[in-house]
Length: 165
Image (cartoon, rainbow, N blue to C red; front, top):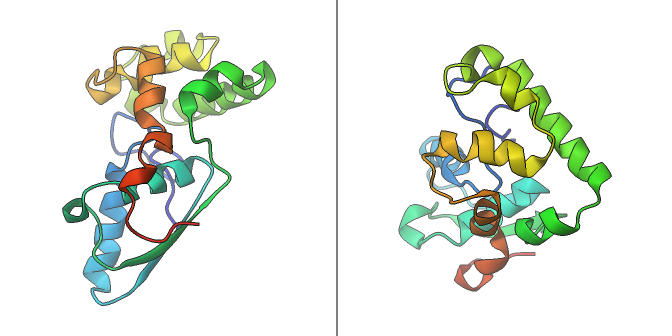
C-alpha cells in the first residue's frame, strides 16, 4: 500500500504529490525490490494512483523495477487536461477542498514555500496548481493546462511493455 505524498502521516518535504509524478512510486518500488529482490511484482493503481502507475510503466526499462509481471489500472482519468475542462464544477470543488485540507494539515511545512492564507483563498483547481503545484516542482510546466497535459497517461500507453488491464 502506497499513499501519495502528503496523504499519509507527516509530510517531510515542502511539496505535495502531483497527478502524474512517478518519483515517489519509483522509490517505494525500489524499496520493495531491495527487500525482496526475486519477488514477482503485480502492481495495482486506482484513480490518480492508476494514472501514476501507467506513467511509471511507460518509463524506460532501466528506470523501472525489473520484476514487474503485470499491472491493473482502475478508474482513472486518462486525460487530466480534458477532465479539467469537462468535470462538473461540483466535483472540481470537492478536489479543491481536499487539496486545501492537505495544505491545512501540513501548513507548518508548506508555509516555508508558499503563503498559506493566499493558497487557501484560491477558488479553482487550476489556480491552486498555478499558485502551488507548479512553483513547488521547479516550474517545469508553463501553466496548469500544460501540467495536466504533461501528467496525463493517455499519451504514454504505446510505451508500456508489460501486460496492463
